[in-house]
Image (cartoon, rainbow, N blue to C red; front, side, top):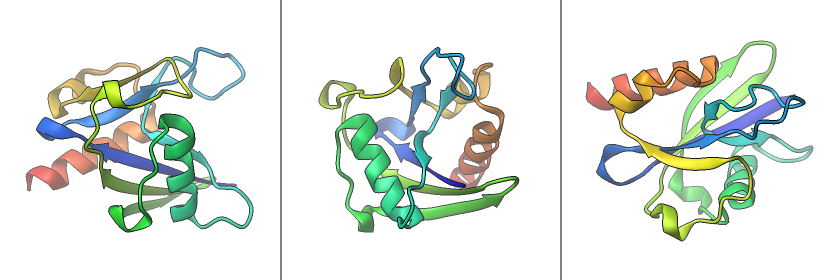
Length: 131
C-alpha cells in the first residue's frame, strides 16, 4: 500500500493543512495533516495526488504544477509533492475533514496535534525553504 500527499503552498508563505475527521476508525482522527491519501491500483503517485486534491478540495491541479518533493519508505511508501495553491479558503469546497486552514512556519511548529510523520515532512520543507 502506498500513499501520496501534497504540501500546498498558499499566499503569504503559508501552507494549507486539513484537520482530519474525528472518526475513531481512521488513523489520527482530529489531527492536522497535509492533503492526500491512498494511491489507487493502476495509478501513479502523481495521478493519485491530483485526484486526492480534486476529491478533497474541489480543485484540479495540473500534473505539471506538482513538484516531487520526497519519498519515504517505512512500512508503506509515501510520495510527497508540493504545489502552488493560489486559492483563498472561500474559493475551495472542503469535501473531507473538519477544517482547512493556512499555517505559517511558526504556527505549524506550535501545533501539538499534527500527525508525527507529517510533522517531519513539514519541518524539513520549512528548513529547505529558509536555506
